[in-house]
Amino acid sequence: MNHKKAYELYENSVKILMENQHENGGFYASPPGTRYPFIYPRDHSMAIIGSVDAGLMDQAKKGLDFVLSSQKPLGEFSQRYDVDGNDASYKDLQIDGNGLVLYALGKYFEGSGGSFFEAMADKEFVLKHWEAIEKAVGFILMNKNEEVDLIHTVNSIHEYPAYEHGFEIYANSACCAGIFAAVKMGKALGKDVSQWEEEANKIRNSIMAKLYSARRRSFIKCIRVKDRTSNPIGYDAFASSVIDVDAVEYAPAFFGLVDDTDIKVRSTVKRIHENLWDKEIGGLNRYPEMWDRNNGGYGPWPHFTCELAHHYIRVDNQDMADLYLEWVVDMAHKNQLPEHISTIERFEMWVEDYTSAKILRDSKLKMIENTRNHPKWQDGLAYVTIPLIWPHAEFISVYRSYMEKYG
View 1 (cartoon, rainbow, N blue to C red):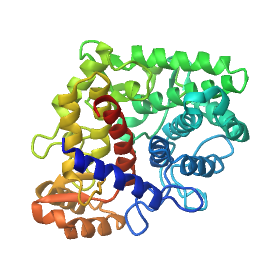
View 2: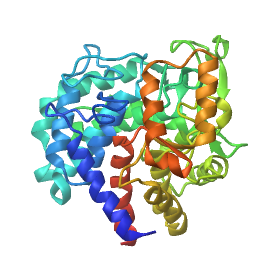
View 3: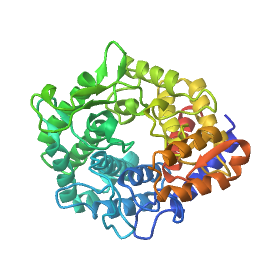
């Protein structure tokens, strides 16, 4: 890996985080004037974690204040917000946002104490938002199915109900990790969080048992179920399994629910790499091309590539960590990372498919124009939505991990 270029990308990623936090505290998903000038709890939470890893504790705290203060009455966080914290959602429930906000708060809490956690951790801030934490955990558990001890959602990380409506692995992993974070904070404050801990352990055990396929030697994407209260779920009208490979099948290890050295994780990552590493331009795709939901053309995503790089660092496979991170560094344009990258052929095929099907929304026309006008178009590549803040936050975290291990 080119360490000079990697460090330059790291430095600019920190700068991009700071420049794209609104004065109210919200991190834009992409800068004003681009495709996502809103605050999405999912992207926002990852930006908070990136801030913690970069040592930007004031920015992380400000971001947490924003999102925790924007919670809905039942404890849910909206799909997205405007800069004033108003609900700007246009999609249904995405419960992984609840887990991610709690998980990010937990990362801030750990980081605020550092080596002197017991004495220095920001307990005052957690106490200030304890009611929001209780409501966030309560909302997650409100959506747990008691038969299988898994969390039900309509949408998850890909915002694609066709493959995510039910008991989906990323949503369950994020929510489980979020509850565990709330448990750790609660214990530090002397709260009785034994019931939360019991429920989190149930969810983790169910992820390991019910969202893992022994024959495939891989975690699976989703148990598709329409109604969260279905009992028995086998008689639900949607009942089926989504077993196609998906980058987020790494989620149980990414969120620390299982060690990366576990054979279940190793074999899952092997399957992900073999099936989703892009054979033409490198980098990691998020799911199979046959899903045909490839906004901007099928191609690799820098932040999923960074996430899998964590695995190779944790299992001490520097060659594979270098392969993944070197691709991210090499594909950065002027130290900026896009949402994803495609070839011109794939991009134009997507434009044709969506135009013919009459499903090309007006909101995507500007994205198409910007992609065709980007300098990388002359290299035969479609850079879709650049910069996206999430991959920069993710690169900060994985770069720090890489340097701690190999620097």
